[in-house]
Length: 149
Image (cartoon, rainbow, N blue to C red):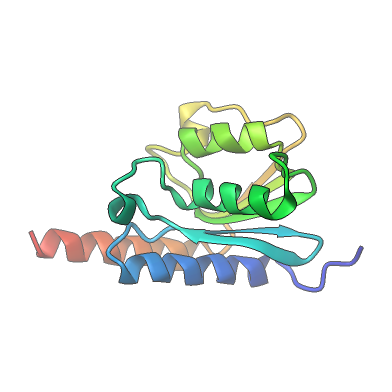
């Protein structure tokens, strides 16, 4: 099937989710999951609102997508995330058997790459798409938090 939109289109949707998190005072990370050109899950960080360290954007999106599909496996799905998944999220993505992960900004301290987290052997991962936009939003958020302390 020909995809009606490209990766940048879906990453913009993930960035919109990150902006929603920002507005709520959450670390501005967003995620969307797509199958056959259709967005089936949208999410952003909710760790503060839910008082739950596992409420990362990716985890919320995985749950929503699995509910939409009626099963736990996300084969033929692509996750678009504004930040490289952490070890916890990468582990969940491993178990979901997601086909592809596209992320914007690299997380040089807590990202799954630097942590050595393995992804499912059939999962493709691509980084750096719209990295500047995602990084700028994160920097703005943390700069504001430092000023307000």
